[in-house]
Amino acid sequence: MKLKRLPSMREKRHYVTFRLHSNNPVMYSEMKGAVMNSVLNWLGEGGFSAARCRIIKNLWDHRRQVGMMECSPASVDDIKLALALVHQIGDERVIFQVTRVSGTIKSGKAKMK
Image 1 (cartoon, helix red, strand yellow):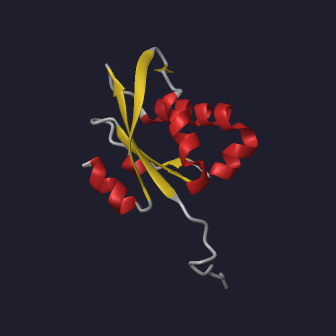
Image 2 (tube, rainbow, N blue to C red):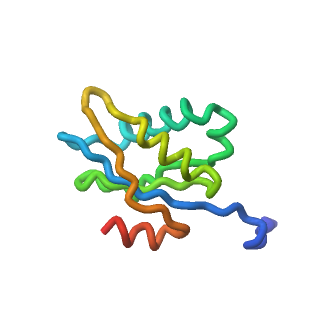
């Protein structure tokens, strides 16, 4: 029998919506590797695990280069800074622009459109 946590016991999440500016489209796997590597370098292993960050794969739009990332509320500013530190993915020069930070996926998706 699986026990459920009460809503008050669950850890809160925030969702960071971002846009990737580049001359050529960047694949999801390359973008994910660069972002996670940047977050790990900036926060270290302890901060990385405390941030509980992950990129939501089915919300990555390859054509428009828009995506969403989930993290803990205390680490939103660190995640935004780590995104700003990514300047190159492979041979492609890139710029990450954070468009919105929201508390729900629904309101974050509304800004993506």
